[in-house]
Picture 1: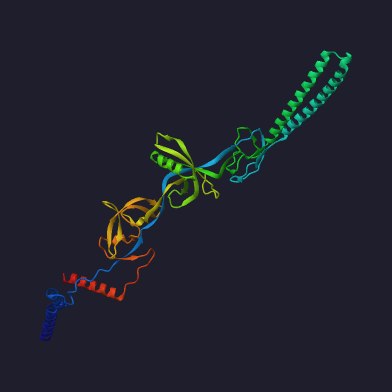
Picture 2: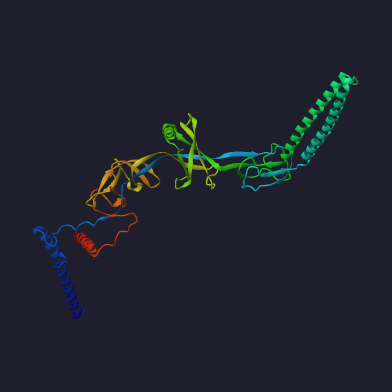
Length: 420
């Protein structure tokens, strides 16, 4: 290596060492940090103003309201048709036609099916002819009796013959009466060839096709009556006294509502409690109840499972809050209550019951007008400063001053981490 390159390397090394030394002697922020520390020790200065005030937490708050609260008992129920009728022919014969469509609504008196009527029509006409024959014989017997009665005083007719003619008239009168009954019976049998719906309802799936020979044991179709309709349900026996008292004290039937399987929304309302069963099931400790719904839109269907809500009474002036405001703690239920100074405290409460799907009634712990936090509780602790928002209100964008304070706080926290 030449002398020139050795001198160049020495110069470069000196420059690097000098730069490192300068950096070590002049650390960024060291003087400022010392000055800040000095100001902090000597008394309030620019750095001695204390911590910036913590920004309030935006939360949704709602007031405790007072209103009349209905009290419900809930149970699992089963929908039952008001009437179910299995349609069987009342005479045997060939099924000529069906006059309904499966699933069709039919009215009482509608013709559902027709059976071959020819045999029954012939029997009817035969009975009519027999009656005409016996009426003619009766007329002859009456005429003979009348003539004999005119001749009897002259001694031309014996008393025995006269009695025989009287009995013959009675015999033909009885025959005519029997013929009238036979005609009525034949007419009924002929009428049975038209299968009539006995109720209003909805037809099911047919059990036989036209052209088949049907008997009195054949099932043509089943009809269920849906207007109105029953909902049967059971309650624990400890609720019996409450329900009986509610029925006795109310001037109108107790209201019943049918909800879907997940209690999400009502399927049918306007139901009325009709019957409380007269005994308790000893195997389950429950008693049965039957309610009735108008079911005008066919919302309820026989065999369907529903959740039943029975209103037994109404609490006047109950304290109601959204159910999401209630939190569960190790010591029971509580809410975050907003104070006059915009801080919150943990307020123990007792829940007296549910009010619909989204609210609860409070028994103790709150009064009307108290503000409770319904959203944002996970960011709170007792004494936290909050900014109350109305339901659905969006927090306002931070001001320039708030952003500046947040920036200073972030720089101070960041500098501390670097210095540490």
